[in-house]
Length: 249
Image (cartoon, rainbow, N blue to C red; front, side, top):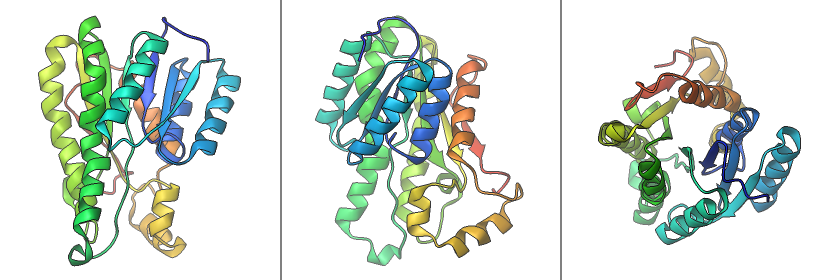
């Protein structure tokens, strides 16, 4: 990809599909140069990168690594900063879910969910923050869930990690505000993604729609539009967990 030392840049984890891909498309439309990462869906993320580069005339780079590996995160961040020179926006979106009884949850599954959903946001922030602090500007947006606020039966580990993301957002935002770096989170309701459809039947999803005041599932584009509205909004907005759930909670 063409090296870009100027213009707006963003790095998105978990960007091969669903919410991450929706955010990537929204930022591409705003002219951001993008770093897109995933662990397994190499073909899908390269197809997305090529599509966005062609449609919006931006530079897009792909990074394949496990966000739960802090050494891999650091290496990817170094490569991104070497190519683009700086980072304006970090989107922590990578996440996995577990649906089942708490008593059936294994130690290995618990640790994996915590590492992917929560620890990865620490790893990415730690890797990219020195660049943001140096230029006294930047945005971190963490993709959370309504279950981080109210909890979900049979999704205890997932809920716990998203609650951790919310607390991290509020605390880190306060710490970084003097450096003109904002930290916010989007607390998503039920978004129509492959991850949700992997765990719930069509009947389950239809039943959820009946309970959502907006009368529909959220779309990845809804999350992308919210990201853009945060970035284009007041610099005074930080340490906030913004509910995007169609009125569900």
